[in-house]
Image (cartoon, rainbow, N blue to C red; front, side, top):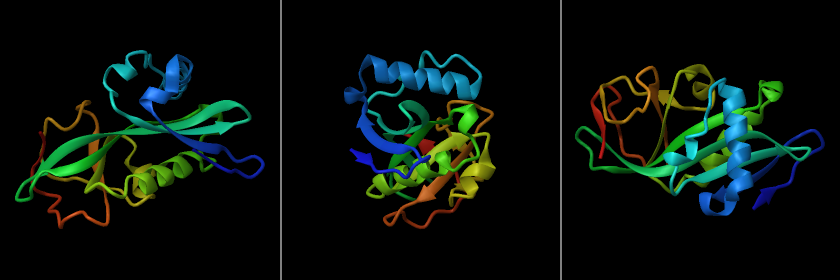
Length: 170
């Protein structure tokens, strides 16, 4: 499914992993590797059952984010069905033009049915501008990268959460 775009604006599409195919996966790996400055060749080794928001401009993939469903367990709250967001990237030549925000807003719309959205990042400022908040309490088996900060974005069905308490992946 694609969203129409204005001239000079990317077209957004949403695809489950199964529909990406080898060419789609390769385009995402190239984009992530270019944007992050590291080899992302193993990206799809841990993105099983993922859904991808793709931003295409003039036939080229310029933005991406995806999510998988995980269970996160904040202290004092039952386990929450969580959209775990990953691989949020924009091609370097197209950064700071609103593409990342466009992709993340679409992802938020698509994941409103879960109880929580979460991600790990070193770029807190970008996500804070979109309404994400930092989890300040301890995390247990949640983050892949110890340099990342856990951030969450509540949904309509998110319970009250104490962001200073522990949260665990189950």
